[in-house]
Image 1 (cartoon, rainbow, N blue to C red):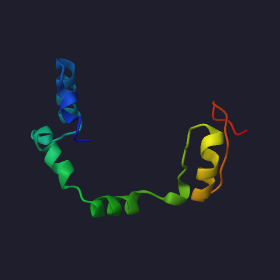
Image 2: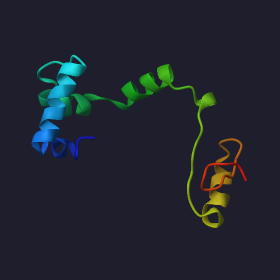
Image 3: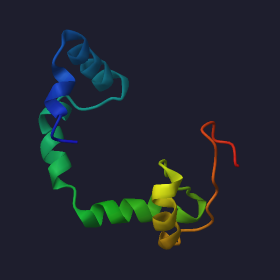
Image 4: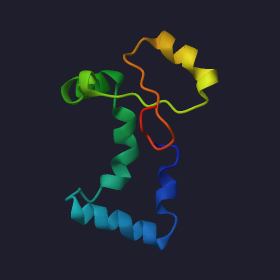
Length: 93
């Protein structure tokens, strides 16, 4: 998130978009000048607390895309739940 932050403000349109976000979402005027330090201040414990509060793993799905012959065995070893094979349109086979 921090490595390409500056790339979000290379053009006048991107800069204007950033200003729109400040107004639209009621962000403080220093939002972008403190953004990187705020991101760097986030700890693993912070992420764990938010995940525990907002994410329910019992209702999640894991989507894995790839060559079945190459990945099927490894995916099955993960034992993360039922495996449903789908076609390229997302319909179960």
